[in-house]
Length: 292
Image (cartoon, rainbow, N blue to C red):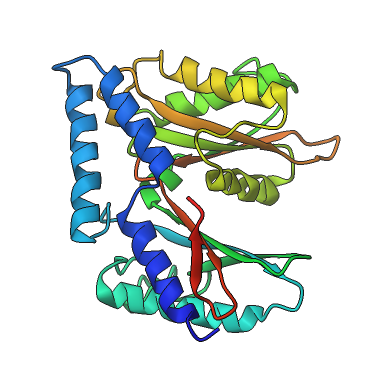
């Protein structure tokens, strides 16, 4: 795959500097809903202007270019170590070009070697399938929004949340309340009901691979997703916590089996700078199609 290095570099660049169309549409719609002359409207205007400037100048949308998370769907027998090596080099080169901030530090020493490479950076998740297609998706998730993620164990007596979808609704809305003014809203929630603590958080982040305008295959979860967004947007938290009608742009829910003793609800928060992109690759590693 001789063209893979260039393809991955372009994937990193585009993910860092361009908002996907579905997210941009949601932001423009939110701007139109905000009351004229309010701080909320001004905040959404600045966000929209920032999106345009970043794209036109090919510069990162946010100075925090975030955790670098690759999701790779590949055929059986795919050279995963070779891909990982190429992806790491693409990240290093993208950092040198300024598409990524020098953003990854050693957790013990605090040292930053300026490459964005180290244990867990970038993170790569491979999924093999019985298909010749290779699809690579990339999420850049900022630290501010990562800080307001939450995980609840049901039942929760304080919130009067039982082990059912109504209990899930209560803790999800509590997470929205706890995050207000933080995490660079308006945000998007990725949610997992069930699983263990680690698997729940992992699946909650995978929900960010979904488009904002898609539909959950489970009618009950589809209804809950819409309810969470509608209810959150009536709380008056608004963009950046300034008040207004746009607290969330979307909410996406996945489900994992759980043990009878545990009932976790894991909630990941994505800021308005919702950096997610993907490509389908050809035999030589060339980009054949953009996925978003």
